[in-house]
Amino acid sequence: MLIPNLKHHDRSPDHNPNHNLDYMIAHFMQSLSTISNGLLTMAIAMMITISLSLSLAIAPAVAALPTKSAIKDARIILRNALPIDNESLRDIQRTLEQMPRQVNLKRWSSLKRDIETINKNLVRNQASVISEAVSDRRDLITAHLTSLTNSLVPLQEAIEIKDRNSIKALSEKALDYVGLIEADLIASFPYEVPAKYAQLPQLKGRALVELVTEKGNAIITVDGYSAPVNAGQFIDLVQKGFYDGLTFTRADENYYLQTGDPEGAIDGYIDPQTGKERNVPMEVRLPDQKVPLYGKTFEEMGLTGTLPVLPFAAFGTVAMAHPADANAGSSQFFIYLFESELTPAGLNLLDGNYTVFGYVTDGKETLDKLRLGDKVLSAKVISGAENLVNAS
Image 1 (cartoon, helix red, strand yellow):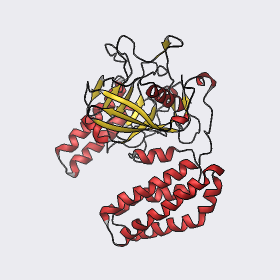
Image 2: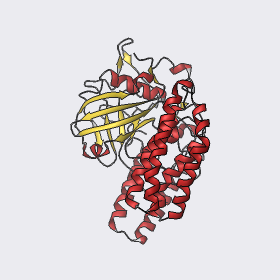
Image 3: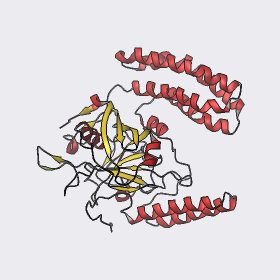
Image 4: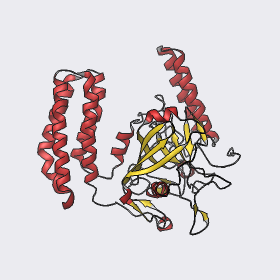
C-alpha cells in the first residue's frame, strides 16, 4: 500500500512502506553511531543493520545479502558507467582510484609500484588507445593522453616524499583526464531504446546541467548512456525552461529534495502537441548489460538486492519521481541526500525502484543548504545539448 501525498500522489522515496523502513533504519544507524565512537556501539549498529535488512529479505525472490561495500563517489560511478571495453585504461583508472585509500593505510611501497606501473602501461598502450578511437577524435585523445602523462609527474613526486595531503587531489586530477579519454573512445551511442519509447526525447550521451537556486549553484552530470529516455526527458524540459522558478515542494534535509511540480492541479509536463501528460518509463541498467531494463521495478522483477549501474550510493544522486505506476514519471525529480557508511552494496531499497539519471558532481554544499520552499531560479544545459534527440 502506498501512502498518498495530498496533492501529488507521486511515489517519492518515503511513499513505499519498505522504503520507509529503510529510511528509518538509516536514520537509526546515523543516530546510534553518534551516541558513542566506541567499537561496541558500532558493532551493535552493524548487527542491527544486518538483522533488519535480513528481515526485509524474506520474499523468495530477494537476492542474497551482498558482502561488498558500495562505491559512494559519484565520479567513480559515472566513469564505471561509460560503455567502453578498454582494460588498460580501466586498470589505470582503478589503480588511481585506490590511491587515497593506499595513502590512508601508509602503503608507500605499493603506491610507488602503482605509479610506475601506470607510467609503463601508458607508454606500452598509448598507440593502441589512439588507434581505437574514431579518426576525428584521435588528436583530442592524444592531447588528453599527454595531459594525463604530465599530471602523473607531480603525483609521483608526492608519493616519493610521502606527501599525504596532496595525493588525493593529484590522483583525482589524473582521473579527470582518464575519464575524458574513456569518453572520447565511445564512437557512437551503443544501442537503441525499445520502439515503444523511441518517440520520446533521448539523451544519447551525457550532459551537464547547472541548477541555480536561492542558496547557491549545483552541477548535475546527466547520464544518457544508462537512462537515455529519463535523461532525455529531463534535458528536454531544462531546455524549455520548465524548471525555472519552481520550488522544492517536498524535502527532508537528511534524505531528499524534490522539485519539478508545476503550479496548478497538474503534476507533470503537459505535451502541447497531445494535451496530455508526457510520461517516461522505469529505466535501469544492470552492470552486465548494455541496454537498460524497461517498464518494471527490480522489486517487480524479483531483482531486489541487485546493484544497478547507477545506484543510490552517492550523496547527490538524481532520480525521477513517479506515482504508484513506475512508468508514469514526468517532470518531478528528487535528489538523494543520504549516504550510509553501514549500508553494503545492494541493500539500499531505492535501487532499481526509481530511475537514476545523474549525480550532482559539483556544488554539493548547496544541497546542504536547500530546504522546503526554496526556489530553483534557473536550470541550464551547459554542455552536451547536442546529444539530445527527438526534442519536442
